[in-house]
Image 1 (cartoon, rainbow, N blue to C red):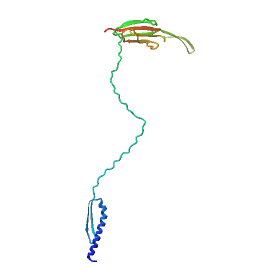
Image 2 (cartoon, one colour):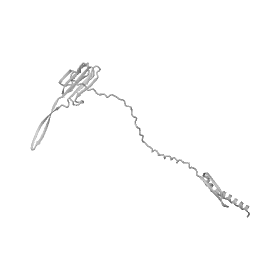
Image 3 (cartoon, helix red, strand yellow):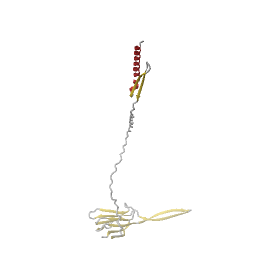
Length: 233
């Protein structure tokens, strides 16, 4: 083979090597940036190939945000409603006035002392020009005696006795009606026995002015009563 033919064969072989090498490294060069390929001739029939590859700086990727799994709301049949606080208004406490003792600052205008009460007692009319009018009364029921037989034995001796027990009569009663003579209205009522209990000493205060009538009624007892009116100031 002459020298020209030999050179041609060598050139063809070198070209094939270059093509084959390009295909082999194309995959490596495909994802590389700033990559260079140096091809130099070596010994007869060989080719030196140097590949310089600079890997690209990876771009950080954000982790996908995980959506919270929704919690199903349980169905409820109860509703809690908190009350709305209501505005409060201040007010002044009403303090009852304690009546002045009837012995101080009052004149006694009518009295009854230990009089037997009946259902036909006279009406007492007072002109209350300077109220209040105070009525103090004490009702004393009649005392009755109960005879109670008592039998008992001491050792062999038997005893028979009659014990006497003195007590207020349970059917005794007293009633005081206070009426306004101008319009005939009942101002107040107070008493002892029946519906008024067994408190024998009581006091009533009448704040009205004008003509006031006092009607006394009752049975089986005695009454001590005093009507007093406030002194003029």
